[in-house]
Length: 438
Image 1 (cartoon, helix red, strand yellow):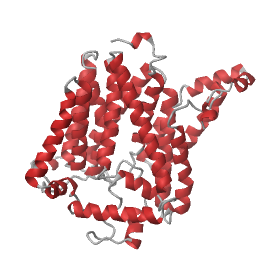
Image 2 (cartoon, one colour):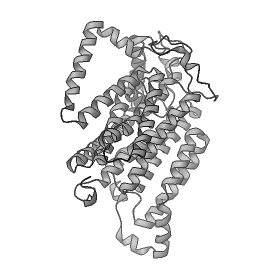
Image 3 (cartoon, rainbow, N blue to C red):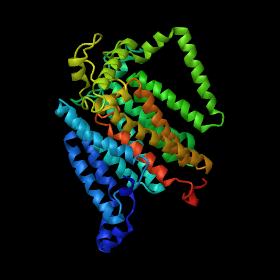
């Protein structure tokens, strides 16, 4: 894989300079058609194949321009292996009409990942991508007002007046569950929050105001979703950013653990777990355990192929029926890691985890470099992306909506592409002198 990513000087010299020049200019435009078409594919799944076709055109163009198919990244082997699980899941599934859109969404995320990695090779482009993702988060918060199927009553943690939800009017037929919206908001939110915390002094007032507006809008909608898994993930994000930002911020970690211990001691572990896990058709921790047990059964019975993306509910109802939920009520494993293994088998989970690990390590290295060279924006970028991965993992313990089953799934790959692109650029041995200090 890596050899395919490296420049071949002999091939480069064999290409006419005029053709190479045209290819170079076209490659510089890659991010726009790919991002637009993948975004359109999120809204209209029928457009995702066109996004993949356009993205595929840029690989030979990049070879003509640079003598390589793509910039090399530490995630290449994981992404490549994960891509190989797509034909396997299409072969294994008994429901191709459900699996195919999710498989295309996964490939669309990979296409967006590499478009970002290859295009965002300067600081200005990284800034553009980062602010673009924050705008995407703001757009999600705006769409929540008319696309989320808000609860009709405030029975679940009723400190938010039920009348507040009456102000929102559902304007779309394909509505969004509050937990789904919360899962993406909590993953998109840390980037803007980190930029405010780390780069406040180096950011102009108009940009500060815009970032604050985006953060407040996403946070407000996150609160309204009443998704306790997302709230828990946001608490972890807040603690992580405090620990990364201030010298004595690490004290937040033992204080948080102490607070969690006191809550468990006061109310009981079972009560605390019920509060966190109860929701919708799921009755507390017992319901979650039953769902997770069915996922584990599937992984045991289909360890190499999985059951096919999106097939959890049908397979569970047929082979591993629930006792605490009605048939058709549980449509996924309610755990991100189990869901990936259920869909793609253990090889797919290993590949996904390797990419996740590379992204987290890349974000950490960007953060450490930003702190070392005292560049607030670079440190904010790394810290925000690292906190985003923490949110993905913590929220993923009780939900799986950030996987391929819902339309915004490629947004996770966009964050991953930004992290890997930043790590490729911000290496201390080649970082430009002009960004070594604020």
